[in-house]
Length: 271
Length: 216
Image 1 (spheres, each protein chain N blue to C red):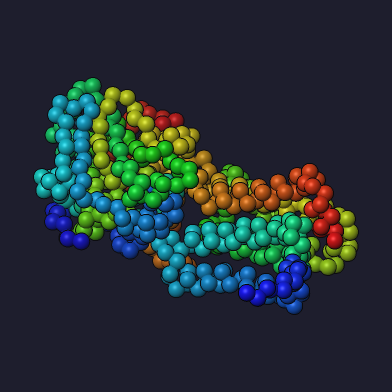
Image 2 (image 1 turned 90 degrees about the vertical axis):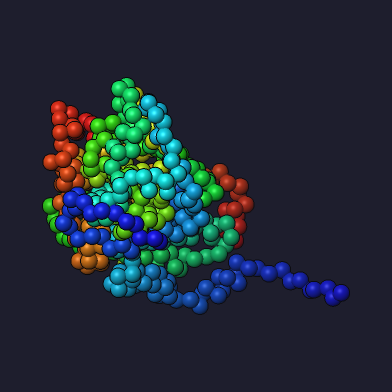
C-alpha cells in the first residue's frame, strides 16, 4: 500500500491505538461472511478501483467522482477516533480522510434535504457473503444520518487507516466514520450518498428495529435488548488472561461535541 | 473377466464388532483435544483479536456438537443398527464438560469474576437465563450419569434423562440469541437438532419395519 499524505489533526484521543493486525483481521462486514475473520479472508477478489462515488438527491449540483480524483481534491487529515461496536467491543483507530460536510457542501444541498442516505456496493461475484443460501441482511447495505449529523465536523469519510489505503475488509475504497455511533452506522465501500427529505431505510434497522434504532448513538444507559452496553471489551488490550474492559461513555466520549444535536430528545426512545 | 464371489456383508455388524474393542475412555481423550488446543492458542496469543470471546464461543459450539452427537446415537442404532450406546455417556458428559468450560470462561475470563455484572446478566438477559437453565439441566444429568444412580433411580432415571431434549433446544436458542441476524452456523445446528428431535416425535408414525430392524 502506498502511504497516504495527510496532515495531522487535533481530533485525537489519547488512548493507545489498537494493533493494526487486530483492526484488519477482526471485522464485521457481512458482505464477505458473518464471522469476524471472514472479511479479511474473503475479500481478496474485491476490486476497490476503479470506483465511482456519487452525491445526488436533493442537491443543487449532483456530483460524481472517481475515488482517486476525489482523494486528490480533498484535504486529507489523520484523526484518531474511538470505535465502539454494538457487540460491546471497542478499538482506537487512526483514520485518514476528510469531513463529509466538505463533500456535501460542494453538492449544494437544497433546503428540503433533511437526511443523508448511504449505499454500499452490491457485487455478488466479489462479495461471497451476498451469494448465500438466504440473505443475512436486506442487501444492499444501507445507512443513514440526519443532515446535521452528517454535516458535523466529527463525521468523516475515510479512505485510509494506519496511514495506508483502506484494506478491503475495512471498507475500501471509502467509508463513513461516525465515532459517536455504534460501528454498524459507519457504512463501508460507499457508492452513493443521497440527500433525502425523510428518514432513510437502513440495513440493521430493517433487520431488527427493536434492537438497532436509526440513531444508534453509543449509550451505556440504553442496553441492547439482549445484552448490556454499559462496558466494552478493549480489542488488543492484553490477550487471553489480561483482556481489559472499559466503561462505555455516553456518545462514546464525544458528548461535548455532539450532545447538543439531541437536545430535547428522549434517547431511551430514540435509541 | 473374473466374476467376484460377492458375499453378503453385514456392515453394521462389522462396525459394531470393531467398536467393541474401543474403550469409551478414548472418547474422552479425543473429545477434550479441541479444548486443549484452543487453550494453547489462547495462552500463546494465537486466538485472534478477541481471544476470550473466541475461546468462549468455541467451547460453547463444541458443547452443542457433543449434544448433537449424543442425540444421534438412538436414531443411528434404529436406522442402521450401528450401536454407539456404549459411548453415549461419554458424549453426553463431554457436552457437559464443554458447557462447564464455556460457563467458566464467561465467569472468569469474560466477566472477570465481577459478581454484580454476572448477577445482573442472570436476572436480566434472557439468553443468559436460557443458557444457565440448560446448564443446570446438564448438571443434573451429569451427576446422575453413574451406574449407582441408574440402579437407584430406576424408571425415574429415564424420566430425568428425557430433559436432554429441552436442553438441546435451550442450548441452540441461547446460541441464536447471542448473535446478530441469522448466521448460517447456529441455523445449521438448529436444523440438525430439529431433525433429531423430530425423529423421536414421529418415530411411531414411521413404518414398523424400522422398529423390527432395531429389535433384530
